[in-house]
Length: 105
Image (cartoon, rainbow, N blue to C red; front, side, top):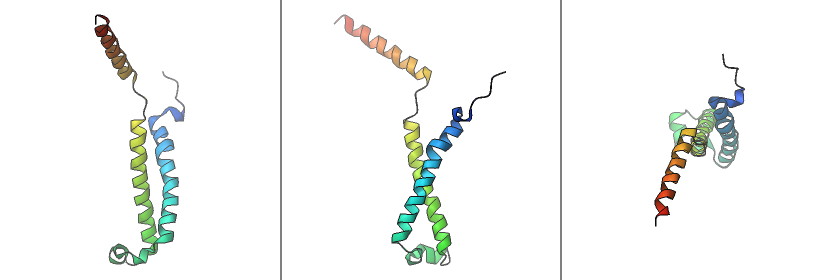
């Protein structure tokens, strides 16, 4: 039986800590700055679809900012992910073959 892993070693826990939490915090700041400059009732979308509700506009705006920032952070997180050991072995094997082909030249 395997010993339990710490929570920080789980991929979902790391995702929550490294992507969703920072994007949540920045979405709060983005929403505050956006709605401090723009009144939601001046936007035609709010008047038409949300029934002149500022609270609904703030809520939807927050989730839109959070989704955009989380998708950006997710892309960065995936691109910066450490390569698997298999990928490292393949890369090292390719380098060995390249070096041998240059020896006779």
